[in-house]
Image (cartoon, rainbow, N blue to C red; front, side, top):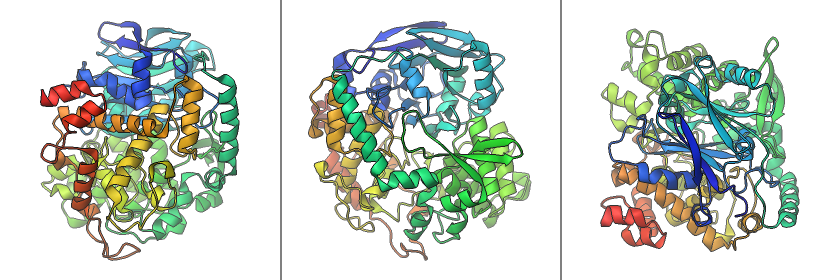
Length: 609
């Protein structure tokens, strides 16, 4: 087998055992790797009503065939399980150095079950694994723990994925963090890791699987590097990071403000340009990436440099809360990265608290402080309370759906889909995003089908995914479904979503690495299989069509900006989407024939006999 080690590590923390889990070439070819491989391994473990934090609830780390090759922008990994935040399928991805170290340790991924009786960390090196005592690491933040592990192991070439206090406390919005501020942040998977008393996964090594055609891979890598470096967006990302989108996004009414009720605000205060003008910024790149979209804010405090905020974080702690003080935005981001919590869910929850406070639903007595729009100090205090699980912070840490239920509010006021908070792209600005959010495998997600990029001009001609009128719902559903399937492949290969490589290039790379014939239609079917498998997992857990909806607060027409008076026709798009996917309108499940067509035989038998 080329491109793979052909094995996962299986860990039972309750028993303290580790052993190899062989993965056949047929399985690799069917599910590729990353989050899709994780879904394949997790599916048999899923039971309706299962507690995501129970010992038997699995946690899977997975790389893909592209990982640890010379292809640029492939130092990525996926982590997956049943989401503690939503109760449905959960996955998150991250870049940095850790993904290369994980695959370099001699494994394609890790399947973890059980619960250790005391804190441990998992150490991988040269195809061998062991569990180490992590008692002295428990309670340490992400950076402190990394320092202690490096000191203990006495080697510098280590990659680590860890949880902080939020994960240890099983905060439902906690994530798994690696390297310098890189986060597999969404779905609360840090809580799943914390529930297992697993502080960290530590990997070392450079063991590379054989490639089918090494010379061809080298040639394709050179071509990919050249294509990436010449692209205008690569230059812009290098200069301004993901914040390059701020002012364009506001012009398009794509940046939500004042808890999704506004779209016009002083955007010049929260752009990549204003960040560079106010602070000394250095770039940070994942291993093997020629762009370097990550930011480091030098000397944020005397002698202390911190991770710079990305677009989603800046908008969540910024305009969504009517806060334009970069100091507090950076501080909130640093707190989340230090203690391991998702900045999107936390920012949206704090904005909702401000919304409720303004209406008098949440009082000062209940909150323990004033929570007014634009108060950066209150944002910092609330983030700290969320991390420590103190006072109102405990409720905010459970997300907006739990908040709405606690205060007896209409659930349409909670800015979430399937329990996961809305990202910082407004569904009213690009109707293709509305259908992508409503049907996405993990809830509201701007990466599981970032359709706004299509209507901004990024066509996928091989699949006839073409730009169209962004404020029209007509004909969007089929194209959005195909785009979801296509982009799901990135988390299987594992490839950065910012990679500009064409479908043809991706097929050539997959074939050169694995030796398999790879055609555009075949890989799109693989992406479709991935979406349907994840859907089937959530269906097993009780998901129905009723969960495929956008909250009212994110659909009501705005009175300002370039989307004023317009809203997506979600019902029409859902009907077209279901017809294209061949999902049953009554149950929300993939039809039997569709499951069988995709080779998902176990799901077909379980649902239909």
